[in-house]
Image 1 (tube, helix red, strand yellow):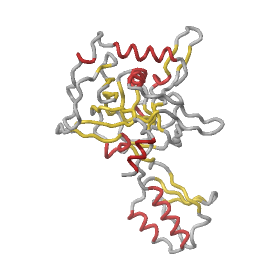
Image 2 (cartoon, helix red, strand yellow; image 1 turned 45 degrees about the horizontal axis):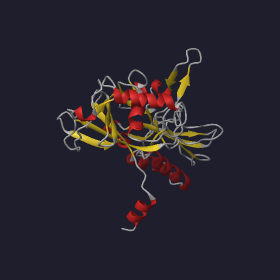
Image 3 (cartoon, helix red, strand yellow; image 1 turned 90 degrees about the vertical axis):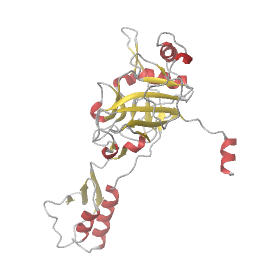
Image 4 (cartoon, one colour; image 1 turned 135 degrees about the horizontal axis):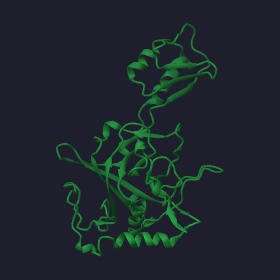
Length: 316
């Protein structure tokens, strides 16, 4: 985290960049599995012994070698650390969060501040990080997509709209997914409502309010693609007063989050509760390759355009 224990952050950078026996950048070779449709770089330097965190200075990015560990369900992470949060993260990295932090610092990325919920919500901040995913299918064809494409707004929940009462003569079938809560005057639907289901429900009554509420539930339940922006929060440190040792908080697994965690290395700028009943995102399973698929995750700090550049672009 910016401004907190800068000496240890500097140590992360120095240790990571010096790993691999003192070899220089020029002595490194390209990654053997670099996609053919991605511009090749000659300098991918491993920042850890597992060679799962790579620094590409020429390309201005940090590369993570991960694998798919989760394809369907609610999410807290896009990428967690191995043996931590695989039950709520699409990808897992066999490595340390601090090595990823060090790589981003080496590229000049600036950390920000973690989420704050008290006394009111203050969003995570930091330099924007563009995250791209690359993988091979069963035919060895490479694919490349923004990380947001693998996630969507949660559909595994109840969608609720107000309704004073059901229209006269309407009795909802027991097998129907549509429910009416008399006590709270609410109409509820779980999951994605299909067009066919909507049309069948509209046939139950022509009463205008009921028709509108059913249409509202249909719209609410449709898939909402993820548009959130990732930022380099930078996590933080815990000082063990007994031993004097400092621990990087994101080693708990909170490497790249889609639910706001104060310990995150990378988080989303938008509000996204980490409470189990209020998670905002789920895995878009139709778009995610099979479990065990190796995925290269590119982390590229986004450089802000100067006012002069912005002005020249807008005038074209």
